[in-house]
Length: 246
Image (cartoon, rainbow, N blue to C red):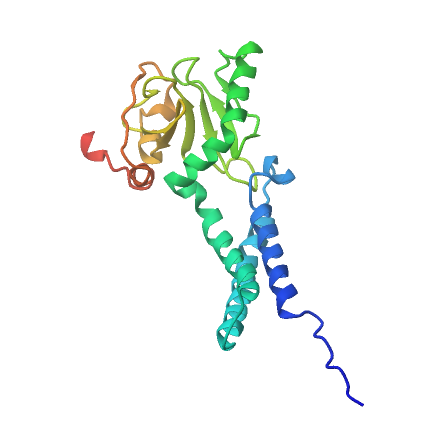
């Protein structure tokens, strides 16, 4: 009498789809769309847990990849969940770091951004110089709302999940027809994202220099200096690339 082989508790197919599900959950947990993303409380323990969880997921991916390579003819059904998990894990966290990703996020967020500006104007808040209520607008977390120069050019300072005060020295600035005005020519640069929105890059060294904009209210806004590439703006934040022009 023949005996049917016992089925593994978690066969390769379901196991790899489980890996995909856990990867999606990990991406969501660190995104702007979670309930805790709007909290101003420090959540570094949670951040650390997610940080180290990615190494566990990466180890699982490598094991699954090794098992696939070991097989002589891996099927598309076996490869699909692992390939999708890897692509999502690599590409999604990079969206905010690349210009193409920023354009994609802006496109997704345009209705919410337009509504936010319209609500403030119709609600009589257009002249309010500051708003420190953290909010989600489309795909962006906005830590603060500022009007450093004119009432029709709001600056939406961007943050990250896991507690307010997590700024990245970047702001979305609405200026429909021209480059935004800048409260300081040394501390800020701008890159057009289209649809009347610009990304402002703040160099912390210049911003907090003695006599810089951090120590005085803006009094003499001038047309901002623009950049040709997003990576030039990131370099400006990190290195203060325009010090030679001081």
